[in-house]
Length: 343
Image 1: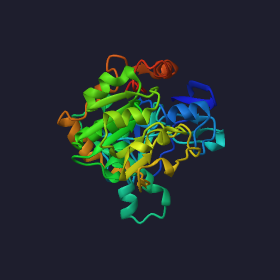
Image 2: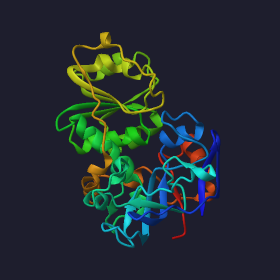
Image 3: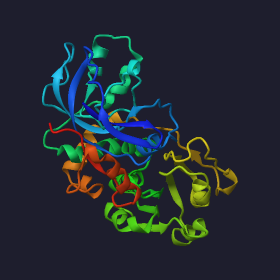
Image 4: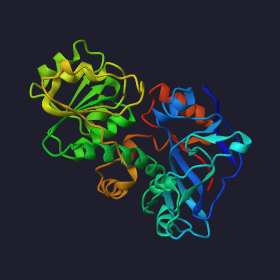
């Protein structure tokens, strides 16, 4: 089968790879679509991802697949199910690894519930809580955006954003826009975006009440002038050194701030002396498998609109995945969706 493989940092190409290894609790899937993640995928592709990645690696973690075959112990998937986060498997004996393996023609999901019920001793099965069924009325290409939304919805609700709070989001990429979208759906009083002016119109459609250019000199002074009440929550969706310090003076005493982005993971510091008073650094994290149902419900209600994030008329075939990443780099789209197979 074909897959998009990062051969070494900076080299991404589509080539033949071995078929997935299917275990007794695995369901073999045809990968229908996989969306790009500007942070994780780009960092893996460029060799600067903060986690341990071995190369060559099959790229992609925002995939949607359709179940085609069941392992003998699978009980919670059926043939034809639309499922989240399938991935190709590593073949280290052949020198092939995965960066989750979504950009491939086929992969597996694992029946973690059956493994729990059978008391299988495997600490890794918790990861496969991410493999969940998507209702058949959801367009499979639209469904790729669910993965990003699950991560960010789990994160923002665990952090405590709620009705009548004031939220500042740093970043207007796919993650930043998702946080803006979610804060609006949580009925925050104010949702202010700091980012690229090219994305301001979209940010406002998604719920931003104000937008500020990230190039603004004396950013905190400008924000304090426009929003003197300050913010209950600040979320850095980019993750660069200096981002949080540049806006920390706008955080209310008792407020919460969070570093979500990974651009300079491990190198970001915060200077507490810049704050108005005591504040909390949120380390709640997320568990995307816990929130599939509310994400699907909001999609059905029109409160989350996938096609604000990608162009349904511009789906990239797997063979053109480098063109998809070039379009991202040129900021032609928020996310690119790649068609992985003809299934």
